[in-house]
Amino acid sequence: MSSDAQILQTLRTAGSNGVSGAELSQKLGISRAAVWARIEDLRKLGYEIEASPHAGYRLLSAPDTLHADDLSWRLSKGRKIGRDIRVFEQTSSTNDAIEKLARDGVKEGAVVFAEAQTRGRGRLGRKWISPARKGLWFSVLLRPELPPHAATQLTVASAIAVRNAIEEQTGLKTEIKWPNDILVSGKKVAGILTELSAELDRIKYVLVGIGVDVNLSATDFPAELRTQASSLKIELGKPVARTELAAAILRELDREYCRVLAGDFAAVASDWEQHCATLGQRLVIHLGDRRVCGRAESLGEDGALLLRTEHGHLERIVGGDVMLEK
Ligand code: BTN
Image (cartoon, rainbow, N blue to C red; front, side):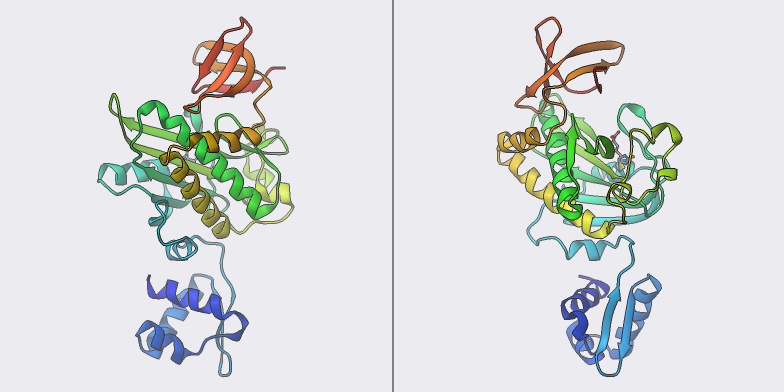
């Protein structure tokens, strides 16, 4: 753990009691002058740290910026997801950044966050707006020993993880629209873009890109999206702390991913089905040029949506643009 992370952890644990410079210096094995210099740097990053002769240093508030060490210490030691966390100020797309790491052979569980993306992308080649410090824009590298057709299981597992974390942190009632849109009051607040590199019978790596519209205002969305998209801040009526939410999502992702690897996708799917706004609905699905209509019946063992078509066949849907039939 870096000295910044150790200082922050010690200040957080001490709370209003504060910690003396001598104690920090002993704990970190650095001089009191070096502790002071670290505190000054943390202040520049926006941490409000009071220094008093009696109470020592006290952390009054933390900025809403993402800090890799700060995220790390909120996660458990033996985790897979988030064992390597990197935060960029800006990148084209975190899926591009994580793909580079994947090609360089970085271990699974690495996570790349960006405070802003210049070319964020969504499913079906759509643009994903990613304004600075207003959302969570990040990608996770997975290397599961699974056949390529099981990749949809990871999409489903990621959706339930994001849903659970949002509900835990905000209390908002969330639903999932197949395969992986997270909705609050019928509006999309988060989306997941899963990209796969595979050989015929095995996955090489999966990139799970997650975008959560946390503190965006209505005007941050293009006018044509405002009826369908929203943010947690708009729905809750107040801003949401991004670091806490990011850590909660990583914890939930770790839990759900371990369930998939343990062969317990049935449990993940059952949680997913409980929160799914799509099952039982009549849908229109655009698969490229093809248009399929039917009733969403259930989730297949590989995470596919099983659709009872208007001709009575059960069709396995693994992608496409899903809309409620009007
Ligand atoms: C969708 O619902 O269409 C998927 C949206 C996924 C957006 C995230 S933001 C982080 C990662 N980087 C990207 O360029 N896209 C994903």
